Image 1 (tube, protein in one colour):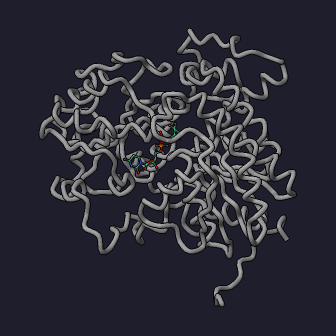
Image 2 (cartoon, rainbow, N blue to C red; image 1 turned 120 degrees about the horizontal axis):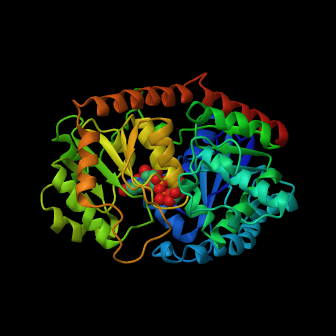
Image 3 (cartoon, rainbow, N blue to C red; image 1 turned 30 degrees about the vertical axis):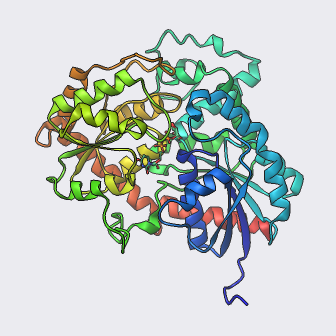
Length: 466
Ligand code: UDX
């Protein structure tokens, strides 16, 4: 017989199947299971169950893993058909999820679902279970998309009214209240066709949820959160930055896993001078052309800066191009790398998790946005927070085979500006990045904005459960 106290409620968490969504949902679940007497069941496809079981560290005992069959296309190669993948996520997961929900013991007292799983609200409504929506991208992007959805619904409008050719126009000219965004930042969203239609559907379903949680923190996007709180008819809880706090020590540096040898790239980082290494990653699934990857490789080499580059499937090929100018790996423990003393900058595609992790680590960033919400995050990094420089101005939708958007000379020049520890420009960015880092850490401390929001969320949702 178990001597564990029985949990007061049972949260069923269902992330969208992608690394940039599974990680922050797991981070939230770790918080819920550690700060409240909550049992969590974390529901993923069988393929994702394998990924989670194969990754370190395993979820704590308060989080049970459960799976539904692989009803969606495999993670391997899914970026090639983003629309098809999204459609499958929207149409194929609902039924097996509902069947699983019916079998769970104890019965679910609440569902926390990624906002991009709009069917979760329907399941919750049918089963009488409250549904809370977790948005894993920036509140700024949420707000722009939400306003667009409202605008199109009210006017029976069409995205064709947005003249995406006028890239430098403020987005505020079209939808109110989105300084400092430009139309160009929203271009890949507006031109997305089916994925945009599905994203708007997800945003319209948010109003049926019991609350919306954000992986951001209030101070990072304060103006946007203030506006959202008066625009959305459900409670809004920023509870980030989404970082697995339990893996951090008291100084909030990443704890080295005990018992296992440090990976080679950590040993390499250990041997480099403080602040000297640029960490380069373009995220977990999008890619740029092979020719652009080569150009990045040449640009990094030309800059003379040490670098650690996560290049996934291209790592072996690129290793030959750069020789010993830097270290290239297929995957790494990103948070551990960003927190390492020798890392002094982050070249990022501006996925929201990477953006938050960069902010949390107090690093200046070089932005290389590729698609979707990433140009918006880049705008925040460069123009709003002023902690980075943009590398890839001409953002469009996905690129074909041989396209090079940014050349090696430009890359080398921007890398040098950011990594010049003695330069005034770099120093100013580092100072502001350090301020944001402190704000991020204050937000999650006892009494900080995110801790308080999480407490409010737990109190509210327990109240609804009782
Ligand atoms: C996707 C979208 O591309 C992005 O626009 C959106 O904001 C979130 O969903 P993804 O491309 O995976 O995200 O990037 P990101 O949001 O940065 O998430 C990647 C996650 O994988 C991060 O938590 C990062 O720490 C982790 N990661 C990445 C590793 O742990 N190791 C790696 O080598 C690379």
